Amino acid sequence: MSNRFVASLFRFVIVVCFFSIIASAHASDSKPVAEIKTDSYDFGEVFEGKDVIHDFIIKNTGDANLEIKGVKAG
Image (cartoon, rainbow, N blue to C red; front, side):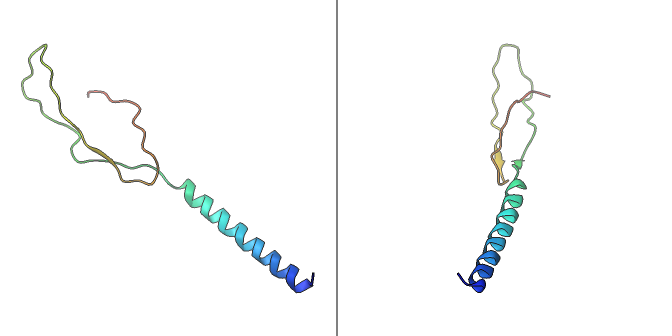
């Protein structure tokens, strides 16, 4: 192998390592983003024993998985 080939191979490996580091850094920047148009709903007068239902639409606009681990009434 010539010195020129070894130097070119070394430069190639350095460039590949550099881009791998950059790509992994950007991958760790990814995060979920929960988007909800309305975060409350007025059920009006509710009588005891009566079920009330409302769907809240949550959209993940981020670039990682969104996990909803708990929901509670406030």
